[in-house]
Figure 1: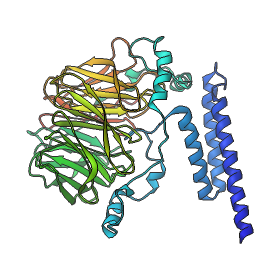
Figure 2: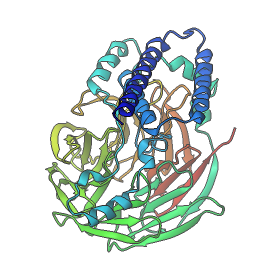
Figure 3: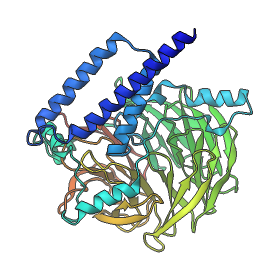
Figure 4: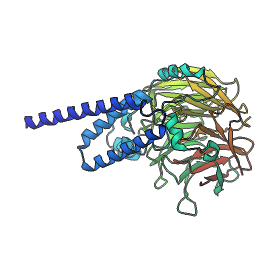
Length: 499
């Protein structure tokens, strides 16, 4: 028995050592592969993927493969920084956490075992990219680039070769409306969101106190179910990573946990301060924890399994908390209030404790209605950024310059927003095409697309069709559909033009 264990351990060490050096050599020499012919790099990547698939058919012990993937992920993370983004591309669909059990399963486990810790929610491996290191790398090239441009990586030319000559404007050309949902007419729909890594499942909340779950395929698109229970308007909601539950916040001073499969309310949790709840977001690494913001200027970290506030997980802002956003690893949280301030917090992954780090006054007295964080703007931009709406008739793009969430204004884009809670997003896919796109609602009843790399004439597209201020926008996972909601209760699903 001891002899067999020794042989297995030697095999593990040999495989890990071989995998480690394979990754080191690949990273070291990737920059030197035919630099003047980036299309050959693309062929190399495709051929390597083919060989990996063929090798996988032979079968290997699952533990050894997990060890290999972990080491390779660490090497890639050290070289390129964190790649996964909340709700973006296929970052979650192929991750280890997708093979784990659902959030709902873990909540039931908690109820069976009260000694379990709140950290038993969703987990996934996260590379430890440093904002400070990225900022140092960025500063080395910013001086030679026009204002507002993104930072090119060594893969930029290869990306352009793979994309061909397709422009960003062509990439975000829409043929027209795919469907219109009007079940919430006459009451504003402040939030609309596609499910994570899903092309055809959509949800929206309304100030009429309900949440609609919609299915776009098979045709015709239908409202699967309407979640009712809140006694006042629903201000915000969020999908869990596995889409099995939703968390909603309401002006009735409660948050509710819903099962998306059958629409039942699993739990109702009152706000610790008894105040109107205005926004919410899941902790991206541990979906057992949800952060909420209320009208009494407080941010609270809530454990949805116990329904209780996490010790040390509360902090006070200068105004009503209107917007929340985590960075991809879940270690930084930004919160915006109605006095025009954005606060950054350090999030303790083990305990859920919040530590206030930095404060930025975007504009005194201008409500911050939306915050969206992104570690990579595009494949050509390893550039941590924050997208902010703040009732200034501008969409603001900030650079994250250190590990405490310090922000530096990069550029702004003209929109109409003076009083409504308008939201914006980064496009979820890190496109192979040149440029990087953001989308925002606007009080001019249009949806606007902007290229953050373009120094002049940044507007890429504008969608017209709403009859009231557009409050929120959401892409599905492959960007084939875009949903937008407005202040009159209309939700429009737009279809991208097929080339």
